Amino acid sequence: MPAVVSIIITKSLDQLTKELATEQMNVEGGKKKPVSLSIPKEKIDAHGMVQVDGGSGFIVDKSGIVLTNRHVVEERNATYLIVTTDNTRYEAEILARDPVDDVAILKITSSKTLPTLPLGDSTDLELGQTVLAFGNVLGIFQNTVSMGIISGLSRSITAYPNPKLPPQEMRGLIQTDAAINPGNSGGPLTDIFGKVIGINAAIITDAENISLAIPIHAAVRDLHDVKKYGTIRRPLLGLHYIMLNADLSEKLSLPISQGALVIRDHPVDRAVVPKSPADEAGIKEGDVIFEWNGEKFNEAKSISDFLEICEVGETIHLTALRGKDTVRVSVKLGERK
Image 1: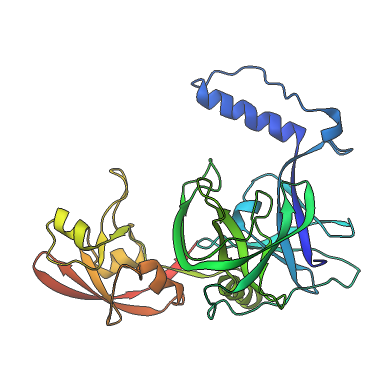
Image 2: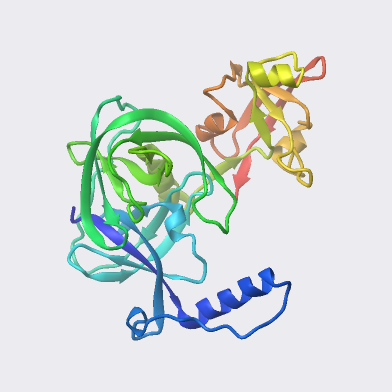
């Protein structure tokens, strides 16, 4: 518990007023009107800062490295404060935000010896395994712990963590019935030995006791990148696609039932991102990619899953169906910014 922290997001009153005015102008077609915020005085600190949101995190290194969710620290023009269980406050520096997984790495500086949590192995989990979820619930109930089991593995969802941002596809998640509530986001999910196996990330609002966590191996990789490169490096292919199944293939009159159909998400989008590795390799809209380095796709394994184990600069070999022809291309993966 001492290694679990609360994360407080604050903004200046002036910044909040400016953002509200911009939002109002967008809604009212660019008409400028005076804006005033009605915030109780007790909610404004001595420096004119107002708390706008919060979450949880946990310390993984004595140097002050803290893991949390990316969506917890997504606010721009904000100050992030980390509060430890002894109520000490630290201003946090954001070292990196993962562009794919919902993981962020922060750092605090302290003269104290900071408690840390050991990171476990999320690649060898079992259904029914007992887990514990820690966090700061609703920004009110600090140091909350709940118990449950692993209810499912390798879950996939489309999440809406922030109304200002596009939806995010999240894959490979751990499902648990341990109670996770708003404010728990970014806290650790541990096994009964206190080793972190996941980062609490999401709940299914229309269901009971369905909570989801990001496997800790995603964060371990990010920590390694930050230590080695100073940033998180994720490979880029550069195309939009949908994964096929038998029903979808039949509706689209495709001769193949498994694979990734290269197709645009929206009429104004491009199916293949211009000047991306996929574009330079000659992949075209309408191609159905069905092999990655000789391994066939299936409903349980998508392009995202293959990219997860690839490195920036790695050359991969794809086999695709283009009309009635089979084409083979080699792609040198770029770096996703």
